[in-house]
Length: 147
Image (cartoon, rainbow, N blue to C red; front, side, top):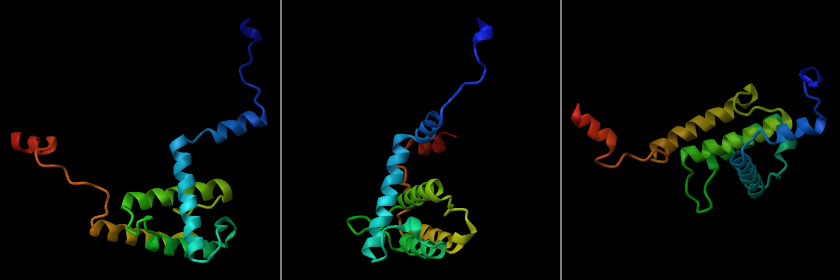
């Protein structure tokens, strides 16, 4: 009986395709979708056209630079640093999967990455760093006094 079992499976292209599609968790897919939707809304509001996947690299890079600096919530407030990072990573996942473009590590995106880092530091300076201070009497504070 052991001789009848194959060591290697026979998978169809559909089986492999399904595995690739299901590799990301539902929350990751939702985050990617929301990041893409937000960037499309930004581009439309700025009169640039929503099809950023078809843009030349230089045009995409320029739009990303401005997006990082100009992005605001629906209420018009600045995003927290972590929210801006989430949107950047969502766009990166989308562009890596659809076009093979890496907006985080790609040399063509050097300027937009500088803008992203500058905006991130500015957000932190303004109190939008995303980290809330520990309340008084927190466990870590108690440990300091018992040492």
